[in-house]
Length: 288
Image (tube, rainbow, N blue to C red; front, side, top):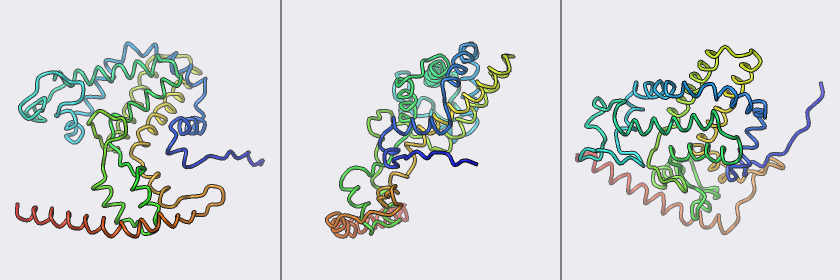
C-alpha cells in the first residue's frame, strides 16, 4: 500500500487565521464543488419546507428549560414588549412560540436556512457561517498582554487556568450580541438541523445519485458549521500558548527569560488576589 503524500499544517494558524482553518477543515472532510452543487440543487426544492423546519427546531428548543431560558431575556435586535425585569415573558411557562421575540428569532433561522440552501458558497458565505457562530458564543481571550506572557511561563498551572477562566472572561471580539449558549446545546442542535435536512431530502424522491450527493454534502456542511462554533469554545489556543508547541520537531520552545520573569513575579499576585476574591465570595455566601 502506497503511503500518501503529507501536507504540512501550521497548528498556530488553525487558531489565529479563520480562512486557513476553514480551508483545512473543508479539505479534510473533502467538501468539494459536487457537494455544493447538490446542496443548492436540492436546497431550492427544500425552500417551501423551511417554515416547517424552523417550527420543528424551536419545538425542540422549547422542550427543555435549559435551552428555552435563552429566549426569556431580551435578545439583541428585539424591540417588542418586555416586562419590568427586561424579560419578554413573566416566566418560562408563559413563554410561547407566538411570543414576538420568538417570532423574530424564528425569522432569523428562516433567513439562515434560505442562505445555506440557496446561497453562493464563496468567502461571504463562510464569513456568514462564522458570524452565526460568533454571535452565539462568549470566549475567554488569552491572547492579549499580559495573559500571553503569563501563559507562556512554565509556572502557569491548571489552577491558574481555572482562575483565569473565572476572572478573565470577556466577550468574543467584535461580538455585539449578549447571547451565550453552552456548546453542548449548540452541538445537539446541529444534529437536529441535520436530521430535518436529511428527512426533507429523502421526502423529495430524488434521483438516487443526486439524493446521495446531497445527503453527503449536507453532512459535511453541518460539520463545517459545527467547527465554526467549536472554534469559539475550544481551549486549544490556550494549550498552544502554554506549550509553545513546535510543529517541526515536536519539542517545546523555551520561554523567553523576560516572559518567565514576568510570570514568576505576577503569578503569586494573581493567585493571591484570586484566593482573596474566592474567600470573600465564600464568606458572603455563608452569611446569605
